[in-house]
Length: 315
Image (cartoon, rainbow, N blue to C red; front, side):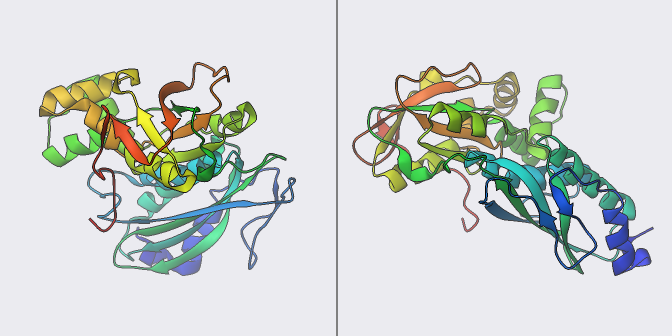
């Protein structure tokens, strides 16, 4: 069965039927708009767009993985502001010939990624499209905290990272090269490309520890920290020896003859969190100090300024 067989309202009803609503949802799918509680009195909002063949390939990723990835990259943005995600809405463009089973898996991916943070899928829109196009908007609650912006870094502070780096880039490189995935480590790298694993809880936790700047690492650590440096009017210096290269990244680099640290520094889509803290803050083991903030501009590694690196939709 295809979505064309169901028709527009059949598709909408099928999606809604797979989406239970959380306690914070006052009015879910079925009306012109949803109503979500905002205990803090402020709402954090982030949105992203994913396009087939640009952000994912149907021959590399199933509907479930695409759903989790689409939700994750938006939920991670909310966490990077120091907020707790509460809900998402989804705009979906799909071909009429798309199998209903793929749509079901996509919906399940949205639902289960949201369940990681106690959020709900509260509504959206659907239309016919030649390619699969997904627009997700995530909402979050600050819980009385100030939002952690990119502009708060100051000389003398430390830069730390929570979550994995380089895994998604390594998995993408393996798929792009058509490598034989013959080990658990390589399979883990490929799985990381298909489905990120952001450290959601570390966003609000970092805010509580006094983080003065933070962001989601979506386009590569060096490029993303460049945004912090520019917004704050400072320079970020990274220590390459401070980074841990995960086994999947190391295995992929050996398989392809690549530099694993290059993926760690410039690979995107892991959706780790990078934050700047006062130097006297005692960080939990989930955060790894990888650099410092000094006077100047840009991002330096090995004592030299890095090239642009990272992901750019128009390069």
